[in-house]
Image 1: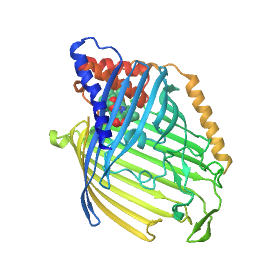
Image 2 (image 1 turned 45 degrees about the horizontal axis):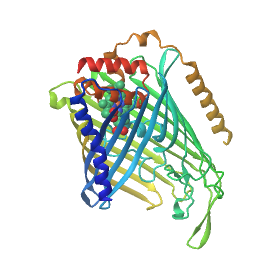
Image 3 (image 1 turned 90 degrees about the vertical axis):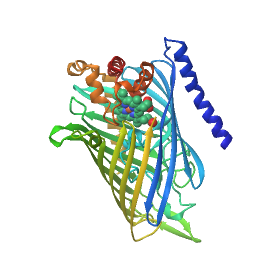
Image 4 (image 1 turned 135 degrees about the vertical axis):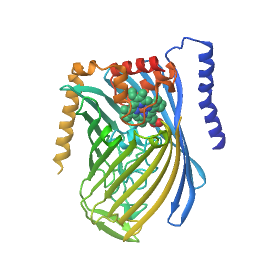
Length: 381
Length: 89
């Protein structure tokens, strides 16, 4: 693993070196270029009997612009988990510009279902050190997947809009074989394609005002979840989502407001699920519908001295409701409050308090409350 | 319940097709915008904006092309923005 990583770093740094030499020797740059970007963060977590320097991440992003039409982007995520370096391919895809307003991309893509994952997840963009409910552990929303997508910006009745339509391998369903209590849950990351059916979806975004300060989006995705030939083969899922973004400097409030949110619905076909638990066959019959949402507001002052202007206050409220009568039935709410200090446009020190309340759930039934304190230092480079 | 998603999906498809084929002309109030104005409006929607002096001309070429695709900006808008950034860095 170590050799591999060293090799990988050498490969990454080669174009960087090449680029510096290139530009010093050839004053007229051609139009095909490499760029290494990405981000890193260091985290500290305290609460619930734990005080620790949590995760540290290095997320290199590799961009190659072959021409004005063809571009490749790929991002790796290196992090430490349980004392080991874990590596993931966040995305790796080609873009080809078909027309000035339409681009096709293919590969492992960030799925444009809502805005959070596609646009906001890098830690120098996400205003809080954590992600909203519905992503991460037991997440149910699409994040990144193998597939093809057509996307672009367009105008409709004088209004600026954006659109994307995609086909991906799509989500799977938990068949309860490993963990009986999780039967019927959607598994968004289908690293292995389990059936011929592809997930089909898209997002449409609209800017009602000419200054693009407000964006309203609607996304939908439909897919079959089950493994080919299994009892679950015909189970389908329909997911849809509404998102909104308002970013505006308001002199009356002496600052810049950043209001965002996303409301998601995950509907899976109803049917009784049978699973072998402790030697006996159990049947669960429930209405397999979940929903999850987040609402976030940030405020950054435009008055005062530089120190004050570098501060930002953020609040986020997030909810997750899973089906009643499911063995994984739960209701979760989460509050996160944060204070950020922006050293520059993509370097920040973030402190945050997060309070979680979970009722039910397959890990520990009953009501659990968790309060955590986070410090995150993030840099985009 | 079963039919709902299908109808919605089809409606969504038709709408998308209209969007893509329609390709309405750029409205005058948008084509009148300068690169600086477009940069101010389009580049701060997801993250803080980098000042033009952050990058060289070559790096801006790549970053703005990257953002054209990632942030679904049209090529006309991207061209104006990159010209502005290169003139102001």
